[in-house]
Image (cartoon, rainbow, N blue to C red; front, side, top):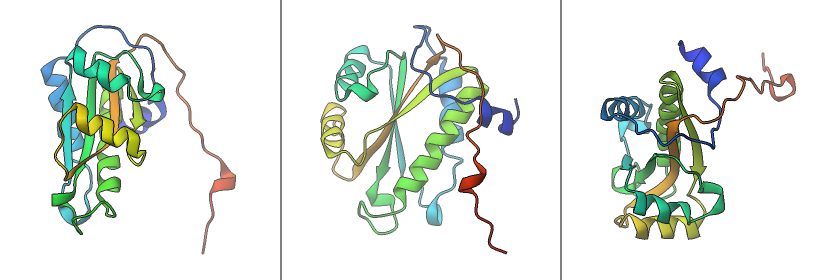
Length: 169
């Protein structure tokens, strides 16, 4: 599958089979994530790969909008000690978002389903996830990606709209 096809095929999947994902594929997802662009190459990302059912259950209870029964979660966090200005008002959000998109596209190319659920900037979610996985103060959870083999299919699509495109010549 080429990149363009993966982009159009990538959809938020909310129903997963219970089949486990191999360590090889998980590593491939993480390699792709860390190939993302990063401001000044600071690479402020941290990845928490979670398959522990008890921990996953606690994370699912953080918010209804992140409560999906996937067999794997990756929580993508920003490490403010490795950011340009050492605070939460930095490019770590863009860097980690690019890493998340790389995970989503690579998972699609591996015929896996994913759904990206936001944690930051909802501080209640940030605080709960920080407590559940015992994050240090310098690590801020940006989002959780549910990953698994799809138990639903969705048609590929684009959401292209000419009205959102503005050419300045």
